[in-house]
Every structure is written in structure tokens, then in C-alpha cells.
Image 1 (spheres, one colour):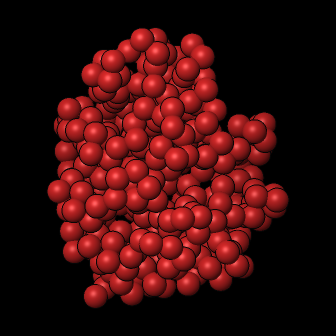
Image 2 (spheres, helix red, strand yellow; image 1 turned 45 degrees about the vertical axis):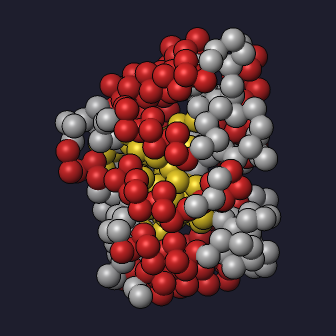
Amino acid sequence: MNRRQFARHLAGATLGAAALGEAAARPAAAPSGGDNDAAGVPFQLSVMLWTVYRQLPFEQRLEKVAAAGYKNVELVGEYRGEHWDEARFEAVNRKRCELGIRFDTTAGLRHGVGNPAERDALLADLGAELAIMEKLECPSIIIMSGNVVPGLSRGQQHQSCIDGLKAAARLVDGKTIGGAPVRLLLENIDPEENPRYYLQSVAEGFQIIEAVNHPQVRFLYDFYHEQIAEGNLIEKLEKNIDKVGLCHIADVPGRHEPGTGEIHYENIYKKLAQLGYNHYIAMEYVPTYDPVKSLAAEREKCFKAARR
């Protein structure tokens, strides 16, 4: 299952039914042997694994990411579909350590924060997921709003997102994994991908994060989704950089490499560096040519733009 399929699954299920202070504002330390090419750039790069080499075994996919020069990988709960046992977790951890890779973020909870009737189920899912995140030393998880709930006004569902994130924040308050604060990352989805999804607006997402007001709860700014939904990407970034905990990269249309569509990513990379953004930027595009070469080229372009 990829993140797009997960979002649709979550949407269908939804319709069917300051403790850490400044520490929370910093990303996890780079793996041992860190990324020397990233010197002078405040952020780290990652790859959302669902976008590449889905036909290969998990460990070989990590090898491909490492071959492209990346030290961080984001997951969508691949460990669920493959029925991993303890030996499998140990083998994967050995491989990622061998490659110098860190799992920085995961996703795939079955319930969202936008439906108050699912609140207990969401918290139970999150509690179970935290145990797996510990095994993988993965400190962050993406949280979805879920679909519009029939019978609830937008105001009620907006408040449910706030209340749900506050409840989830209590589960992770002060908690660290692998030396980094555990972080909850709220994401919007554009209306073309899922017209039934509740949180389609980055602007509303930032309002929710501000209302939650917890250092371990931040927004996932996916430039692909927001370009489709509302645009005006850089101004929103400048005004809300303190609320951003993760960025996702893909061009519009097609979800392919930056430069294949209408988003000027060099300006975005440059702006993120100027703003001192010091979390992760994850490549979540589907390559149009050899994925290792594509990811390596985008990595180089990103760092070059960030240093301007």
C-alpha cells in the first residue's frame, strides 16, 4: 500500500463509521557517518519509500536509496503488510545500520483526528504504532484528518482535529525515540486526489497546529498537494515556518521530479534554507527515469539551491 492508497482507505473507513521546548524544534541527529555533502544546509533529505522499487524486497529498496546518496527513509507501514516478526525487525535494523540509514517518519494509522467518534480507536492505533516506532528508532508519524463526516459541520470537524491532536499529544508528551522527540505531523490532501477528505487546506492546517500549541505537533507541508489545492506556496511557508515539521516534494502535474511541472522548487529550497528550516525534506515523487539517478540528481540540485 502506498500513501495515496492509504489516504483513500482511511477516507472510506472514516465515512463508514512545551515540555520539550527547543529540543522538539530540532530534527534527529544524522546517522553515524552523516551526509558530508549537506554541510552548510540546515535541513536533511529523505525518500518516501513507496515511490521507488516497490517490486524489490525491503532491504534491497534501502540499498537503492543509499546508492542515491540518501541517509533517511520514510515509511508507510510496510512492516504491516509483510507480517514482520521480531527476527525480521532485527534484520531490517541491521541492514539500515549497515547502510547508515535512519527511518525518520512513518504513516498509515487507520483512523484520523477529524472524527470524534473514532478518537479512542485513533489513540489505540497510535499507542500500538509507538511500540513499532521504538523498534525501528523512527521518531515521527504522519496523522490524517480523515474524510468529511456526515452530520458534522466544518466547525465541529475543525475542532475535532484540534481535540484529537491534543489527545494524541498527551500520549507522546516528553517522549523521545532514538534521541529525537516523538512528533505528530498533520497532513492535508488535495481535492483532486480525494474530494471527500476533510483537511484540504494548508491554511486551515496551520490554524489547527496553532490551536493545538504543542511542540511535538507540527504540520507536514506537502507542496504537491497544496499547489493543486490552493497554490501560493512560498508566502504560506514564510508566514508559518515555525509550524512546519516536514516537507514533501513532487511536481504538478503527475507527481514526478521537480522540473517536470509547474512548481519552481529551486526557489522553495532556497527559501527553506533562508528561513533556517532544520527538519526533513522528503522526496515523494515517482521518478520518470532510473530512480537512483533521478534521486541523486535531485539531491544535488536541492543542496545547490539551498546554498545560494
